[in-house]
Structures are given as C-alpha cells and as structure tokens.
Length: 195
Figure 1 (cartoon, rainbow, N blue to C red):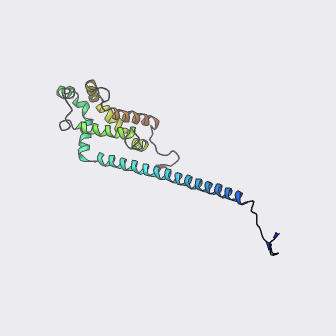
Figure 2 (figure 1 turned 45 degrees about the vertical axis):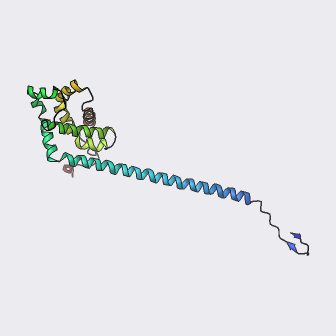
Figure 3 (figure 1 turned 90 degrees about the vertical axis):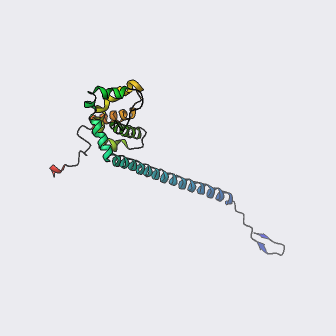
C-alpha cells in the first residue's frame, strides 16, 4: 500500500499469476477440445461400422430374396443340368458360336450371372463373406462344378475373365468348406441331442 495525495492509502494489486492463469486456461480448453474431438471421432467410427453392417445385411437379404424367386430357382435348376446338356453337340455349339449367350434360350446363364454378381459383391467387401459362405458355400461349390465345363468353353472364346467372380466365390467356398468341414456350429454349445 502506498499513501495517496490526500494521505489515504490506495490498494494496488499486482497479479503476477494472470499470465500463468491465461496459459493454463488455454491449455485446459485445448485439451478439452481434443477430448471432445476424439470422442466424436470414436462415435463416428462406431456409427460408420454400424452403417456398414446394416448395408451388408441389406445386400445379403436382397441376394437371398432374389435367390428365392421362382425364375432364379428355375435358372438354378437349368444350371445344375449343364453336365447333361454338355452331351448335346447343339448345346456345345451354341456356347462356342459367335455372339452373346441368349439368356432366354439358356436360362442357366441367368443363374451364372447371379453367381457372378454375388462373387463381385463378396470380392469387393460389399457383403460379409463369412455370413455369405456360411449360408451358400455348399451351393456355390456345387453350381461351379456343374457349370465349369460350359465356362471353360466360354473362356476359350472370351478369355479367362468370363465368370471370374463366380470362380472367385467358388474358390472361397471351397476353402471355407475345407476350413469348416463339420460346419460352423459353436464347439462349446451343446447340440439338441445332448440336452
């Protein structure tokens, strides 16, 4: 305290901590902002994972719904008959001749197109491969084995890219079957016969 002109004392406060306090507050606010941004980022990642899972489920349900259409079931039956059709020289000639394969005459190619599409989705991660193979690995392998002779003829004409995504799916299905020869039922969960 110092005396003033009139003899009264004037209180003079010198705050040496004002700079430290401002710096501390700035650091604390920056840290809080970082925490908020980090939490928002984690929430966004979680939300994106849920969105991806939802999209994959919708894609899988769309595939399964299409699979159950009567036209697709008829096309799959035609695909399974390819080994018998390959004994017919006219059928073989229709596959090796010029031009595109007519999907009206050769309905089995509608099923091949579906498998090609599913293989593409699987290869690019648009469908969860584990779930898809858990459901379709046996059918994919069986359909590939039936269609392979016809696809081999097409590849002689068109090159190795013909139905390559179906082949990708068939290979992945074969590897799945080898990895899980007894299925994917949880080992520690009892079967109904054990209860």
